[in-house]
Image (cartoon, rainbow, N blue to C red; front, top):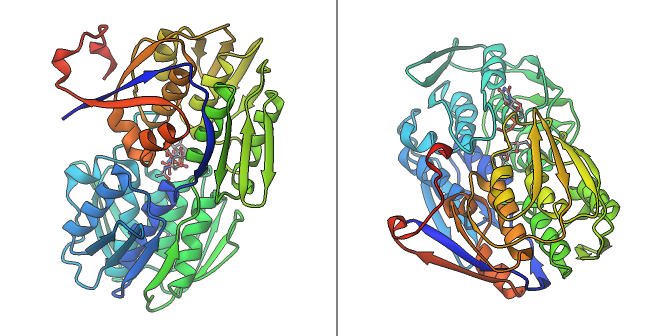
Length: 436
Ligand code: EPU
């Protein structure tokens, strides 16, 4: 049943919330379980729909999946994989599902994986993934919506590959392909995102030989076999940033615990520039919302730059700044669908090419809105918390993809947010036919 959210804005968001495990770390680590016939146990698994789609994909190719909700752990046992072709209808539901290609190819010398789907925020190409597999000695063809890869000699061979631009997914996939290859691989211009480093840490615990973790050059000496392990996922920096912004936008005071501020350096710097009080202590990050919100200039970039996934959420904050902010989106070509929705709440936001201009307004007012993707959903939640009156939001399934138990957690901080499961035709809605 489709859901909508009803948010009554104007409440101050205040209190402490523990960080969840990172979605973008958990998904590739789940895929990495394919690399061994021994069980891999993952701790701090976020209870979000993307994780359950990945679990389904793994189950369908023969991985035994056991979830312990009390401990938030998943145990994945890939001893009896029976297919190198995961079901297309599941793979096409999210981008990260393509992460299974590298491990399948690495362990079984073969993989047939559908072109991935996911949030419509720009081209989500897999050409770098394919080039890296090819460099390692795979024949790859794209046919009928499938990427079909086969190691020429039955086993991949270590190779040097330079990514044309930084790619999180392609680095993860190439690294997983290389760990069981024959010989040494050198991956240059690799993504340095903490989630890629977390995957490398897990692979090393499984017996992989990887050096240069966290740098742009990863050197991987292929091994014959990997073994099982236990790995706790790092904290979700995008979720953390969204909670902190909720404190800032409502003139509240939010502390995210179990969180290493290093993961959000560039973002916290911008929040400080926006006149918000940022306090980092031990493993906690606290933001006290202040007025006026100062306008800032932002360029999204690969880590350690400002994360593209916090672009829509911070624009929600800047929509209430005293002055005009400018943001340049440098990672995804069409992450701008949310602009129109923010405007429904009264924001003065304009997108042009990859630029956003945000003229601060005095207040936002509640309205019916439609989240067009996951992080846009985060932005609309924030704007709705600050808006006067009631916001009714559709597109909740996108938010469910990446924000764990978000209603309960925001409610525990004082937000007035309710999920209603009702047939959509009963709702009165502005015309949105051309939006999907
Ligand atoms: N690109 C190519 N060819 C490729 C791969 C990427 O041209 O083969 C381009 C993309 O089109 C994009 C850029 O490179 O313009 C960066 O893409 P990247 O591969 O780094 O992104 P991703 O792996 O598809 C991950 C996260 C995204 C996050 C980006 C950037 C996961 C599951 N997803 O995507 O997270 O925005 O890195 O940091 O890890 C989200 O969580 O909402 C989300 C979209």
